[in-house]
Image (cartoon, rainbow, N blue to C red):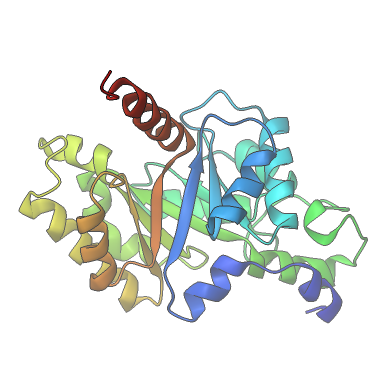
Length: 267
């Protein structure tokens, strides 16, 4: 592995997870300017993830934000709108350091995501030179690909009961680094939408975290930005990645609080 290339490309999220630390993430769904990367850095987030599944972001917008985040030392992840190679490889070529694959329900689906995200011999991602990750420098494939494979993370999402039932075989897939539970979709599939305190939710997190620990992988918490008490509980249980909420929610909450502050002034 090229020492020079490795020194250029670092993934702070992977490094923190290796140390057993908790990673905080900001979801970008509204802001189309690269300023959101600087805001995330100033606020103290470890990573952002651009949500192409639930936004109208273009590949160009996504790539610009990814490159800005990477230059600031924040790992940029992208949740792709579909787990297809043409989405996965293009967002990675554009500057992402990680893929979040929604609605993964089987080991076969997970293997396909890994294959699209990793260069040979770990996958079959198409060769690309002059990537932004390596500052557009040219390195031999034998030097660049191991570094890129090491830095690029693959996160799958468990969002239904079928995924939980296949957790063991999914997390056994080589190249899958992490799973994030999408609590909102999961509770809907369970027939208990929004019932975050339901025992089935705790059971789902306990089962997933234990499975991740078994394979040396990591578990993440998603969809619980309104319940910091549960986030803390699941972190203490062993989760190490927290999706804290969206830029939309943060902006609206601050705006609402300020407007109320003025309307509450007694004349």
